[in-house]
Length: 616
Image 1 (cartoon, rainbow, N blue to C red):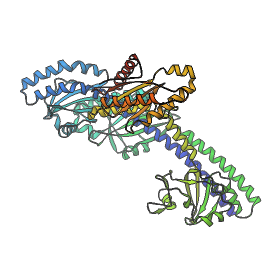
Image 2: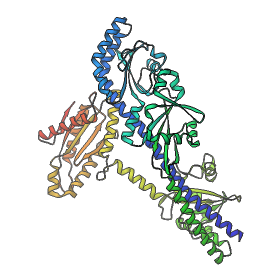
Image 3: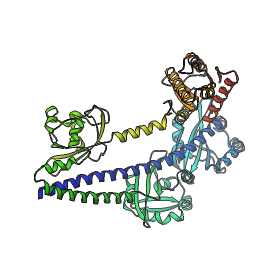
Image 4: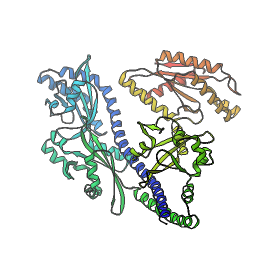
């Protein structure tokens, strides 16, 4: 009786471990998504501002550099005159950008002295380099910096750009955004409630006591002190924040300073707060971004887990009573594991002691003896591949490796079934008491992986032609624009479409039109370099990013035009295409370069089609 009850407990333990692993997996996925959402919320907002100020810098840098050059070493009177000139030329820009949350526009000369604060034009000529780490950094490294930094008046997210005149460093310009403006933008696009919890030591180093008293609340959370901006406390969230700050898990998250999700039950509602550490421009801990999520699925996950445990307990108990009455020997354990659809083995770490039917059916053996006559270990069946377990890993046997890294729930192997089909399994290992034996479950996740790969494929590739779709092409084009702006590289954009494609569809039908599109795609792909980006823009229109200047791209496009014209397409014979080409220009955006290229394609159509028209 005791023996059977022990087997029942093992079954309960394995089933419970399985459902608990599902619970922990789902909880982990929720936490990962919540943290990723918080990171995206912050990074996307910062990047959107960076694009604005990158463009402003490109437009203003030459003029600002010249005036800074004149101010360096100038007399007090001359500096005053230059300040007035700067105010006259750029104050409208500052007032306009204030509407877009710009709260600071600052010019610093090469000696680290403030030449002009557009946001406080009466405060100037102070040695700002002594108080601001970023000023000293840009004065020595001469390159762009961005990040949070505490100032004399308050903390801000700063975008620092070096300025050069005749190749010599003459100072820097700084655009800064208030932390509350960042929060406003994050809440606008990502919802929920955001809040910055600021490192008190960072604020106290630079900001004056009067400004601290005016702008911040000081509060103690656990053993640490923080500052909270007064205008960031919303009445509806004040009570919830006071409740959360006393939670031990929340206090630990602030001490550990790693991205964390803290769950709590507030006013009978389960909610979460994401705690995301934020570093300053110096790379030191500056603040914590708190993102409040009003709804948390953790309660439902727990309830589901408890219901599953009740079910498997009742089911296991019924099964136990049935087996106890029907079977009086060790076959009962065999039948128990044979109920599982996953592959299960019992091993002592060296030899396989038992397997379930699903295991034998998978490899095509009738008995365990047949399997052991050909294989000393199930690890003989493992396929070597990066990211998957093999017989040994890090000089440990695969079982010892799983034991050592038992917290890692992603141990996977690849194996071939009796039909020589490759399958992927997730391994779950449980030790059976103190007997030095293990239950090892191989759960087939091949279908799940295929679904994931299929979803990723659909997101990036055109379903008909199997080349990049428009969304993915726009991603690559933005990358090329960014690279060209930063490193002065050159690339060309080629747009082409099929002449009279509507006539093909009307004459032969859309199925034939689709065949033409696929044949054309294969033909162009065969003549396109690996470094070039080829994508379907829409309908019969295609785009190519060519890593060459416009003259080389013209020759390439003309070659493609001839290859297409000479090719015999299925059912329709000859097909002709028109091409428009343009080269990247300084200051180009995706809209401007695409529009220019589209105009060139239109010109090709106007010029009689089946030709190449370009504009540098």
